[in-house]
Length: 307
Length: 307
Image: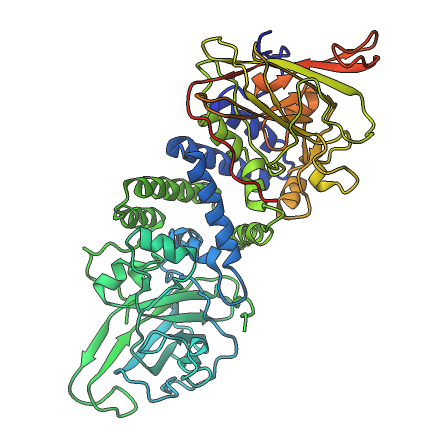
């Protein structure tokens, strides 16, 4: 008795590691939705090529699947480990960069991030968003919002939020007043905005889940560089969601989420003599000038926040 | 005031969708473990290429991440949706085929699957593994276990388990006796084994989770072709974990988990006259001859089962 070979050789059956992919692709190709067919075909091609190049042992493959399950298990209302995985592999930034072509001169976008909260306090230009006596030097931020054709945009919305000098947002830190370091401003007749805040600090992404383990194994630190989040919006212009980073070279280059676009680095000037440009604050303090450029398009707002 | 361009141009910062990948790869390259460095470098390359080719909208990307989280959320003690995802994309089969090179003539391996249970009943050759009066025609299975050099292997273990004629394993079906359609046999002095069972039926993978939704969207049915699981083991030989499929061409070609290796198709002969080769069963019944070939190596056993 010999091991039988199935005789109907016209059937598409697996014979080796290359025929597997062909057979799977034939199944994917039957999908009626053109977009889903395209996406799944590419996904299968890349995942199969990846596995053929890596040649995982059975144990490594099992470990990888367990890692994916652990990402899901660590994802709940207050932590999204799957998004964090996409962040620390540069996937989120890549999608953001692809969807925010800046060849027309507009300011690059950046991730909204998990700390956005709706209903930020409304302030007048020049006001201070610091509601506590946190340590750290004051920071005076000012700039102009323009259209890509150079027109200054008056009455544009400038919404900001940031971490404190110890690297925590108000909704992570019971010691901060509610909605500390958050605020909405409107640009003046010349498109100008200005406000006072405090120099933000960088902070680590959550490290108590599987991504923390991965970062450890890769000898990567978990820190994001210090930044201020901005949403800039005006009727008739595509809403800009972005981040402006504090110019600390080492932190900029090693952002764990790879989010630092060269055009989003703000330059902080330390002023150690005299008084602030507004508000009569004695030195030392920082100033930062940062302008935004919006392209024509639809004014949208971010999705409702979780809290 | 112009939007500042960060002046320190020697810093590695993101400028466009290609520089993102370079910067991420530079971070991956710092990993000290050569294997992890290799795997993560390839993962980043394939995932970034995939995203650049797909060019997902922000909404599509968010949906994809939610899908991954849902796979994790649907994975628990009695359902592994992440493994199922790997199965229905052909990843599990690809890894199995890569790790079971058959150029030396050994029988191809196949997945252990989620329905294995330890402590199958021990039977003598010729015994029947059917413990209930399930409908369906009897199936008489016989074959020989040999080494790749042709030597018949006596006292080899042949363990089998299968779904019933309605497509359910005993541990899914309260109407079946415990350990119905499971059994362990030992080969005789000539390496032969034989047992009586019932023709198994195909069955669907779980469809109540995100993978069911995906299969629907791809217009794919969720069925596996009918098969019998085998573990064949002998001291001094690499343990073989495999599946032998019933020769139903349409079902074989459209296995939702792409698990049908051409060499694993068993040919069922319907006998409609006379009596069975052993056990004196009157026709009609099926017979199937299937031989196994083991390569020299380590005798291992599958991991402890979940139940």
